[in-house]
Image 1 (cartoon, rainbow, N blue to C red):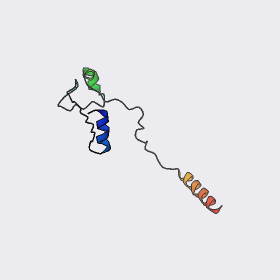
Image 2 (image 1 turned 60 degrees about the horizontal axis):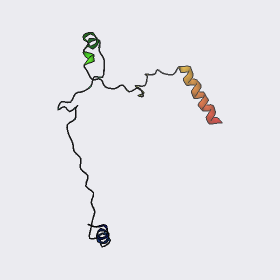
Image 3 (image 1 turned 180 degrees about the vertical axis):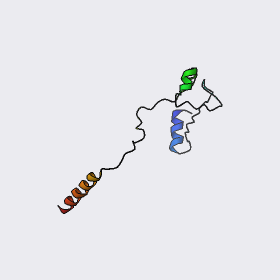
Image 4 (image 1 turned 45 degrees about the horizontal axis):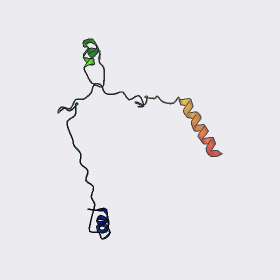
Length: 92
């Protein structure tokens, strides 16, 4: 339609413009029907046989924090000192 007629039909709400989007999906070079899980650990057997060269490895995350270290308990004198400090703070 010419622009003038299209504008007139839009103004009278007799024309509705719709945008259609389409996507083409094709098999890529890395397509596989089997799910391959990447290796997470390098073992001494892999190094000895040299099989680690052909295996895919999971990328290492250097920004992860890891597990917190297991901590021990406070010394009994430190417990008494903190309790006394708390008592004096409550007294003013």
